[in-house]
Structure formats: structure tokens, C-alpha cells
Amino acid sequence: MNYTLSLVCAVLCAVNVFSQPLQVIGTSPVAQSLITAPGDEIFIMFNEPLDEATVNPSTFQVYGRWSGPMEGTYSFLTGGTVVKFTPLRDFFYGEWVRVGLSSSIKNTAGMPLTNGFSYGYWTKSLPASLDLELVGQIDMREPGEGHITCYGAYAGDVNDDEFSDLVVITEDSDDIRVLLSDGDNSYDPFIIFELPPGQGPSTNAGADFNHDGLIDIAIGSTYADQVNVLFGDAITIFGNEFNYQTGEGVRGLTVADFNGDGWEDIATANRAASTISILMNDGTGLFEPAINIDSGFAGETSIAAIDLNGDGYVDLLVATHDSNNVVSLLNDGTGNFTVFDSVSVGTGPWMMAIGDLNGDGFVDIAIANRFTDDISIVRTDGSGGLQFDAQYLVGDFPVAIDLGDIDGDGDLDFISSNVSESNYVLMENDGSGTFINPRIYPTVPNGMAACATIHDRNNDGAMDITMIDESEDVVLFYNNSINLGYDDQKINKNLTLYPNPFHSTIYVDGIVIGPVKLILYDIHGRQLLSKYLGDSKQFYIGEIGLSEGIYIAELYHNGNSQNIKMYKMPQN
Image (cartoon, rainbow, N blue to C red):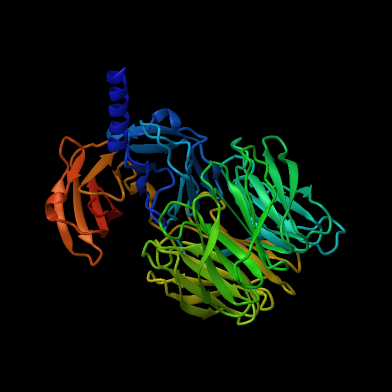
């Protein structure tokens, strides 16, 4: 009896000594990067070997902003501490990809990934122009129909044919109108899906709320206190619709898994109620009653979800129209949010867009300010802190903004929609997060520029722009084209470096044909190391004593080269 008790105690003590809480310690691509090819694998590095049976499509989810839910295969490397996700098809060029791991993932000792882990990155776009060509427009009214106020768009692939479609939200006719791409810069006649009357639908986001592999869409009601969720349908595009109460005047909406259970939730910014509503997914695609919280400022209008402090939990950014602020709220991992910081911006902030504008690895914020006629840029610092950076005049009454690497040079440009100026202003990022060389794109005569969406309409790798006019109810199509002489096939896509972040060893994944050479530089361009790959398919670089920080790995293989941003982690 005593021997048995001692043995049990010894086993329990061994578990306590040798098992650690399961954590993600590195990713490739790194968060906020813009250089990943659409077909590249995703690597997630853990501090402990995984119970491989707990990694599956329900616990490890990948979603492209426009390409939708991504199926793929999972393989395990370096003793089960690294998961490689190989997508079964390519993402779209130039889109935001979000990766979500649930708390159901466990290590071999049965310890869970507490509250899950989420992060995101951008796929690259190809070198192209900032001078786009107007190639057509579509009238969104039915014959004889009056004003409908087109006031929102979602460019997701809603029929799963691997082309970007267009869902146009109409504020005054209370419906959505779906344009299916024909794959050749044009669209089939629109299909109308009715929404509840009198609500003024506008703000929207796509997700796979019920895990059926189809794009669903959530739409906020400007004139009411509702969010409408339409489930994707493989035959009819959209099918079942459910309505949920929020605060009054939903002007902003975002989706993310706020509690790490593997199911995406919804957050709304409610200007009239001056609240934020959190709707938690119940694990079936339906939502629990909203929890309303206060940012401490007035007129919450725009909202975005992103990890601000590197803990793997999705935090919130909110623009407050009546207080002229941007506010950060940090998530404790369970969906409870606490105001962390705020910063003043221009007057009447409306819509905001987020991305790493200056290449420091932290998300930045671009906000359209309706009364000061400008765009404010706000930096984040990796802890949730906010700092005002700059303002750029764009035109009268800007209400919308979108980000994308339009010229394919590895940084995010912006386009603003200026209602009373009747135009859209595109500004180029010079690589440092400073915006230059404004280009003006007019809307139609007597028009009012409502919003613009950056996406690759024809799958050529160059970012196109779709513009919505709310007064004349038309959609304008501006096409881009890749630079002459550029051939993306010449770029080596076969090899990947992992883990990223790394400690002292970098591994190579892919088919190696011939020698592979690695040259490592610091962020100032100074060469630190040059060596060839050995038979073990790994580079040991611990001998040069790197400090924590960002490095550039230049990889030469089979006559091609590629640059990869790597992050060196501190030693434990």
C-alpha cells in the first residue's frame, strides 16, 4: 500500500517537474508580415511536444479575408513541437490571413493551450502600379428602382470558385446584393438577399461561424440595435439568417475568437448607444446574448480585433466619433476586455484600418476623420500602448479607409473615400510608414464616395480597387497590372525557414536540389554570417551570439534567392 502511494506521488511529481503550460513560442510567417507567397505553409512552434490527435480543423483554423476558410493538412516536426499547416489551395494575393488555435490543443501530458492563440499576416502582392485603370462600372439598382444607398462591401469568395466576389450592402433598401465573379474582370447579374426592414445595414465582416467550410457574413445595422448573421450555403450562396440585439447604432463590426474556444465571436461599435457589444459564439454558429461594455469615451464608431501585446489573445481597438479618440482594450483571454490606453486623433473619427505600416512588427492604425478631412496614423508599441504619429489631408468628409500593398513593394498603402469631395485618394507608403504622392480617383458625376475595397479581382497578383458610390448606387472597377518583365514563377517558393522566432538553430523545409546558402544580416544591413546547408537541413548559428531582435535571412537555392524576416528570441 505504501509502495503504491509512493509510486503515484512520484509520477505526479514527475509530471509537475517536467510538464510546462503549453505555449506558442514562434510562428512562420511572423505576425504582420507582408512577404508570404499565397501557397506557402504556416508553421507554429510550441514549447512542448503536442498530442497530435488534438490538432485538427476544429482546433487549428485558418481564414483568408477574401479567400475564406482554408482547408489543409497538418504535419509535425522536431519531435512534435512544430505544426506545419499546408493549405490545399492558394490564398489570394495581398489578403489578410488570420490563424486561430483553440484551447483544445494539448501537449502529450494533457495540458491545454490555455485560452488559445491567434495571430495574422498578409500574403504578398506582386510589383504593380499605383495608377490604376477604370475598366467598368455596374448600376446596383433594379430597373425603375429609386435610391438604395450602397454603403458597404465584402469581397469574399462566397461561391468557393477561387475568385473574389462582391457583396454590396445597401443601407436604405435593407438588403445585400451579391455579384459573382466570372473570373475575367466582370460579374454575373446581382442576386438580392433581403434583410430586416428599417435597420440600415452597413458594416460587415466574413467568417466561418459554424465550421461548415463556407463563408458566412455578419452585418451591423446603422439605424437599429441589430447584427444580422447570414450563413453560407453551397447552393444558394446565403441561406439561414439570424438576428441578434446589440447596442443602438452599429457603425463598426469585427470578428475573432475572443475566448480561445475555436469559434469566432463578434464585436460591434455602437455609436448611438456609446457602447461596445460582445457576442460570443455558443459553439454551433449561433450567438449568446450580447455583453455591452464601455470604452470610457463617447460615440464608439469603428472597431478592429488584433493581438496588441503579444500574448496570443485578440484585443480590441475602437475609434470614438464623439470624443475624437482611439482606444485600446486588452483581452484577458476569456473575452473580458479592459481599457488600456487612448490617444487623440482628428475630429469625428469614422472608419479605421489596421496593419503594420512601418515594418516594426507592431500593428498601426489609419483613421478617417470626417470633420478635419484627414487621415490620422497611430502607432502601437507591442504592449497595447498608443502613440499619435501623423495626419494627412485627403478631401472633404472622409468616412472610409482601406489598406493594401497596391504597388507590391512590401508595405501597406491606403485609399480614403471622401464623401463630399466625390473622390477617393490613394497615398503611397514610402516604406517607413510615411505617406506620399497622393493620387485622386474621381467617382461618378453627382456621386458620393462611400468606400473602397482593395483586392485582387482577377487573380493576377496585382491589387485592384473596387469603389462604391452611395449617391448614384454604382460600383466602379479599377484594375491594376503587374509590372512588365516581372515573372513570379522565377521566385523560389519551395523552401521555408522555421521556427520563426528562433533560438540558435534554423531549419529548412522543402525540396532541396543542390546547395543552399544562408546569409544573415542585421536590420542595418550588416552581414553577420554566411554558410551552406549541411545534410541535416539545418543552420546552427548559435556561435555568433545573436541578441534578441529582427534579422534578415537571405536564402540562395537553385539559382533563386529570397529574403525572410526572422526574429531571434531571448535565451530562456
